[in-house]
Image 1 (cartoon, helix red, strand yellow):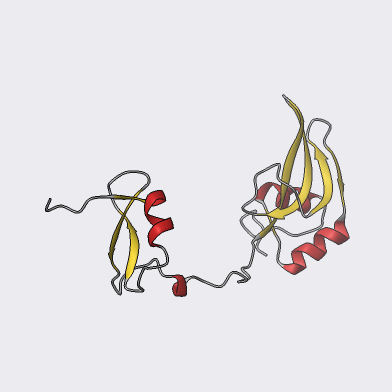
Image 2: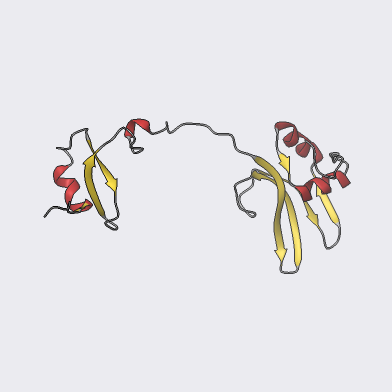
Length: 148
């Protein structure tokens, strides 16, 4: 009788949603899944509708020039792609810039497009930077890495 009883979310919201005052909020507690407790809101509560960030905030994406692996098992074939750094290795690229076949040591690169993406701020991965240096598209820094 002295302890607060948990209220099931699906049975509480339809009946009491319109009568809630602004000084009450839902808080997650250790009662288990589907249980909430109605408690007075405090000024330190991080769940506030007015504190939510606007939905159309633009953030800068880190664009990379890197390899996307294709081919068969034990027979790799790489495409040089421009892709968001958070995307997976075979994710959808922004643009294809060429290819590299390490089995036959053949390569085909679109040098003007690569230089354009680097001028826009795209960073090549270490392995792509070595390949671009061999093709004389960029120069590597003093320690063998791309200095930018």
